[in-house]
Length: 411
Ligand SMILES: C[S@@+](CC[C@H](N)C(=O)[O-])C[C@H]1O[C@@H](n2cnc3c(N)ncnc32)[C@H](O)[C@@H]1O
Image 1 (cartoon, protein in one colour):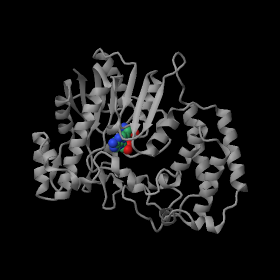
Image 2: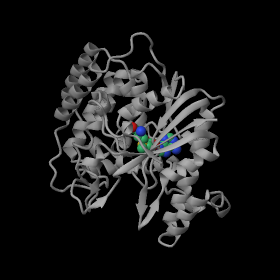
Image 3: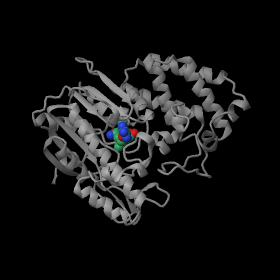
Image 4: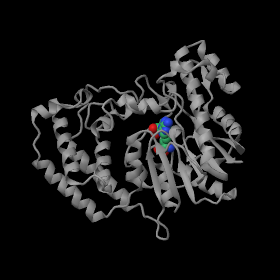
């Protein structure tokens, strides 16, 4: 394992476009530009990039900024909405016109008590009635004022999505969904205006390429269920979910419900890598296919918590499948760069990075390197307190102080 400082810290500030919507476990944008230069130094001719777990689109945005075509997948519709929004091109005057119209319509629309009472029970749990009323007005103003295929509609729905937590009773910055009884939620239209201004500024400062207009394709779905026929990308840059890290269904429940993506937000877990859904159905014959080290981790966990042990085994199997799929996407000598951290459960270290590396070996990769990187953003707040909030205080539960860049080339 090597350490190479190029992966540790960004050399300059990140373009604002990366920060228009919160997303858990987003990686810093410079990782993508470093990976791209690294691949080119190693002789990879990069025309098309991919991120098979694209999250909020960090790789997609950087691909576009660097004139590369892009393919992305994410099972979470909130993730693909953000990615598509960030990769869109907008006319500033049109943005302003739409915004003024939304504000006008908002002040005209009336919502009845019955409509407030008719919203999803989870929404009523998280929001005060007057916020539900205002959010219903705002959503109608966006959806009735801008037709469905328009990128502007996505833009404003993305803005809507990012104001849901501040306008709700959700405990700020907590990774465990819980009500903050002392919170005074923000005003809906003020938050929306603030969010709009941030996004508008970010899109103005995100110049698009002049000499080439890259093709950006973003698919909402389970990457493991895709059927790539021919290799079609030169460079994959991605970060798979860590075993038992974030529960995106829980964390994005407000957006999933308000935007009508799912009636039961928990269904999102079904296709997620590393989820615990259906782990009891993983058969022993399948488990026996795990690489030796992974089996060792599963056995150590078995002594502590059987359910957890099976969940981790399933995660390891999913990662192996992902590696096979990644290999099939890549042209010969194409490169894959994975950003991944290790986790721990009841004293057992879960070596996600080691497992990924061993899967790369068995699924057709060569020149594999595992590089340790210091985490530039989270080093500021690497601990979590008892209710799951990030904190700088030592003595609390340490989360991820370092992570790994695992790189390989397709044979
Ligand atoms: C660590 S995040 C990626 C963050 C991303 N690198 C960024 O900067 O925003 C992992 C992503 O994998 C997605 N994911 C989990 N299982 C998936 C699957 N089976 N197919 C596609 N995406 C999946 C999650 O929804 C999540 O957005």
